[in-house]
Image (cartoon, rainbow, N blue to C red; front, side, top):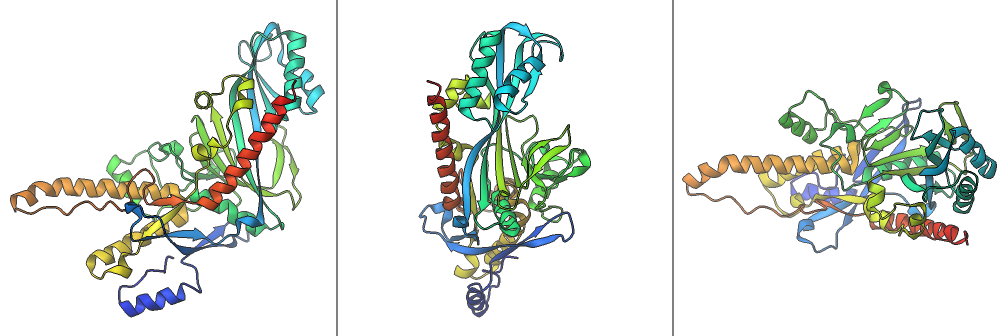
Length: 429
């Protein structure tokens, strides 16, 4: 519970401010589905804001108590799907055999211009954890044997950023994973469409999905807005589940997990269990066309020219929530209402993270706009005027401020990935 600005009497405010130095401003339990359910806690502390923007006036941020320097951060291309057009037809297993011989791993190959097992000139080939020089050799081998009608097209790509504790610790992985879940804030609207909304997934069927923000297909627009504001039906993500954001058919999708296995083959039921030192928290971003094209990537060679740094501001954006200091600065009913509202906001954030909190803020704003519209005519008839709209917490970033430390760690990891990819394409000469 948020405690740093709790009571209105001055002496109680002073007491709470002194106590907040010793105890966290917000405590988030880290829960698993399995026993023991409670893994630990992620604590938050107040952070004063030095940003002079009007939208942040009289506010403070909540910052997670976690040492980012205790993690090694690395970005990778998790997988890459290429559309390959051949000059003469063949069957998919010949493509698999040729690539497996060079890479030592069997790629996933789909016939795109014919029946599944029939001969074709069009295939989508997915390369797991592609090593660029080896990938280029595999494409060259396919071209030498079957001929290429055109340069391979990048259909989709998944880019991941890993956070591995320098000192192996399941609790630290759970903490950083929850930080990634809580502070991720994406540009697309992921709350209007129920299928986009954040969820925890731990299996392959509908019974293995838990929605974090309450939703129902039977809710009207006003009812749905009310549930975005309320917190009673919200659920917090499990530490041993996968946090997902974006519908399965969306052009961009996000996943956050505590990665303890690798090279999983769902069909075969096989995987590699990672040792303690290799386990890490991971955030994955999956890009399909036309999103890939919007990055300037059409052909495989375009990937070598991609500025990976710009992916941070587009897909890996992390923000800190901010809250009002109204109760510390003023007394009265307005301050009490502000305290109540921010306590609701803190509870929403603790369960559904920045995604849910932004949806709540937007629903509050829409509700206030509608109330003003309804009251405006009556006030004019009485000769009254509405107070000027408070500009605090509005704008493209709303009531959030950039989580600069985390963004910088991700930016550096993506920049280093870009360097490795560029070197890989340079080696083809």
